[in-house]
Length: 282
Image (cartoon, rainbow, N blue to C red):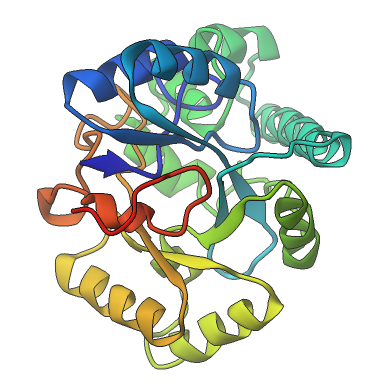
């Protein structure tokens, strides 16, 4: 059992990189990829702990790509040749994220919700600040009943407190990823909000630009749709991967090593990933 999509406190997860590896060991995973959002800050710690516990480790990252109307997240799996240009691009994304948070705060103030950034950072408890922490603030102020309502009324796309994320253009992200020796995998493809009838053509075009793989299995998708995505990926000659998108306490429904339909993630989904050394095992 493996997992090719997980997050730590280096981005928006609730487990430290070491705790994440401990959890992987507890759940009897043989391989884990750490793919924090737009940062590689947790990779060294996770690698050290994985070596101590005898778990194969895939260094990765999940990068925000400019896309409309949905969301495009690109997994870089198997980062083996990190370079200054790649790390500078990630640092720029982190700065854009900070700028976005400040813009959300300004929009809240314009509509009469007084708060300072220190309050938001305190709610983040040392983790990367994001919309969930603004949602928690709105709950605490009694403006909404729960975080889901905070998003649906105020923080979702098109709502009063929404601000767009910083993102890389796909061509730039692919170029940077290739230079690290990693493969580029389209995460949770249904988040693109592309109709099924058009999806094969879109994915084929992405492949022509340099896309290496498709994350066919993700816990937010139905099993039949994951099966359909797997067939699509195979038909186009893409790597087919699977992940839990584990975040820890903030998303307790997700478990390491499990994906859609609570299915175990088989070792075969790591085939073709640099450093996996998992050749056709299941």
